[in-house]
Length: 377
Ligand code: UDP
Image 1: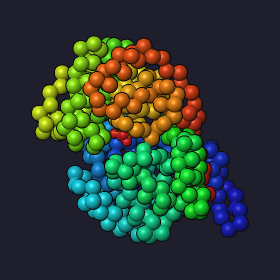
Image 2: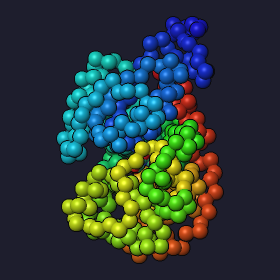
Image 3: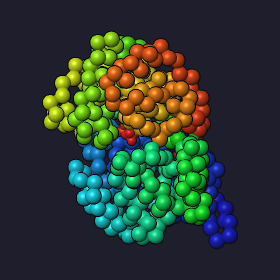
Image 4: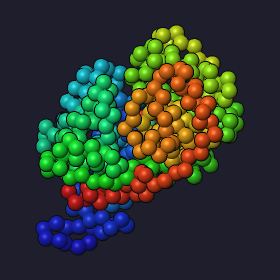
């Protein structure tokens, strides 16, 4: 321990200097945020920074929430707000009210939020209104499609943040183009915390997962697909077209879909029939195993596009745009939208495609960079 000016600092394994009693409040609530937070929470603990976690409850099922805290050793949330299943406005509003109350009593030095969900926006707004410094992990991503609720959440959260942690050079450029260099916010290119997570857990996950055995899946003989984006699930024509494509592909290569609860509900409501293998949502370890052993990924998920690449798998993105444009540039990802013929045609054309992984998402130490910056206050 040493004293620098009026600040007492500790030296830690990451050579992070931490003001005495520094406190972070993390606001999260959805599946991808648990995965993103896992490595940052560990790095915060290593650095001796106190973290209080507020779980909004946006995702609450055991297989959409608890499994990630358990497998990834994420510290138990100190608060669980149990807010879910409402309209966007109602959900965000209730979260805002509750998070604001907690921030008043917790009095953190910084509020930390991840990604682009309603939990992200509520945490960001609560911090900004109380004038507590806000840090955003996964800042600067843009789809340039304001019809996506996620795009609204991202733009507003970035604008309210004082510290912006960007996963890619493209994300930094997006912020610069929007004038963020003039706003006094500090922008950092850190690499992607999802790469940190994949690198950290992959070996253990693949060794311990029994998902292939459980569902009689053959390594190297199935395609992995996920669908959950509102623009696909909430429009029965889009959903029917994607399902028709997956039904056709399934006749050539087995298709495995861990199904998001929202998609399950919409399939039922629209009476859409599937002929491929449907699983309940799987934990992160099972997901890493499926990624390792599949031949290709078809998805509208943001996180899964990167994980496909990092696992050396070609990806068809079931959207018309992506925030992860470097994957398309690298020739590892094709935007196929929801057109049945385009999906099946592009699948057939790329069946044998080999993906060479390059370090476009950093070096697996994004979390440490983030914590180092947070420790400066
Ligand atoms: N994921 C998982 N189990 C599943 C589906 C996804 O563990 O059944 C993981 C996936 O590997 C990735 C993250 O959840 O790390 C992506 O979350 P999601 O697709 O829900 O959100 P997005 O990334 O699109 O925001």
